Image (cartoon, rainbow, N blue to C red; front, side, top):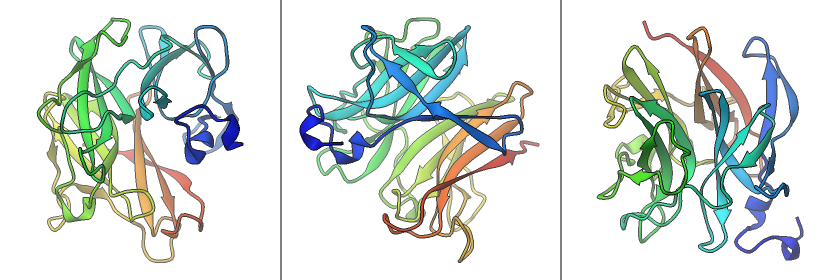
Length: 279
C-alpha cells in the first residue's frame, strides 16, 4: 500500500495484514473462502487487522482482534460480530482493551478469549517496559454475557505478566496464547521465541483458568510441547503460533505454522494440524 495513503500509525508491515477464511469437512483439506470483511458501525469497510480470535457462543460469532489505535500508535484489542463468519461489524468504534499496567507498554496483540465460570478471560501478548524487547502475557476478564465493551474488562495482570519467557528455549518471547478446557483442566498452548527465530510450541496447564504451570515433557526444556521438525523438514526452522480448536464432538485440534528456513525472505509459512489426545 502507498505509504502516503496509510492512516497514521499504520506501518508497511501492518498495511499488508489481512485475515482470511477457509472451510473444510475433515480438518485437513481446506478451501479458501475469502478475506474476512470487516466494517465499522457506520458501515465503512476497514482493515489492517490481524491475529483473529473467533469464538461462537450464545448464538453469536465474535471476533476479537488486534488493530492499531491511532491515538497511541499501538496495536490493541477490538471486537466485532458476525452472522456468517465472513462479514464482521465492529461492536464499538474504539478498542475494547488497552493495557494500563506500568510493567508493559500500552500494546496488546494475539488475543485469546475463553470462559471460566461467570467470566470471560482474555490473554494477550505485550512488551515489557521500558526496553520493549521481551514479549510477555497479560490477562484481563469481563463478566460473561456482557457486551464485552471497554468498560467491562478488568485488567488482572497489574503487578506483572501472568506468564513470561523463563526457559532457555523461549528466549525473549512468549506470544500467541490459545486455551482449551478439557475435563476441568485448562490447557494453555503458546509460542516460545519470536517469529523467524526458531519459534516452538509450549504448554502449561491450570485447574482454575488463571494460574498456569509448565508441563515437563522434555526434562531439559520445561514447557516445550511441540519442537522444531528434523533438519530438512518443512518446519525445521519453526513450529509456532498455535491455535487450539474444540469441535462440536469434543475432539480437539491444534493448528500451527511452520517453515523450513529461519530467514524472513526465504521459505513461506505453511500451516498444519495435530489431533490431540487427552487420555
